[in-house]
Image (tube, rainbow, N blue to C red):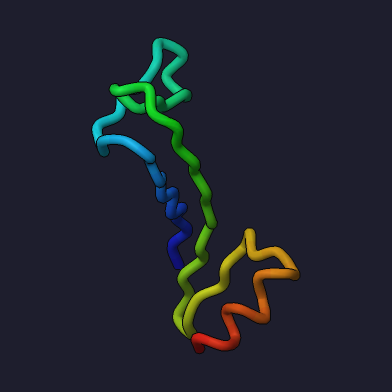
Length: 65
């Protein structure tokens, strides 16, 4: 298996970002507002499991298959 994280970022301005000196924080270069969300996915021989899926997200996921 394999485990990985998907971390999309939505910005109100341009897409360009920079990593701050703490090597963790990411900000937009134009200092526009942004939001980030992430999920950790486990891939197995039989499929996948979203390890960080919250209960309120499960029904929406079931609707799209």
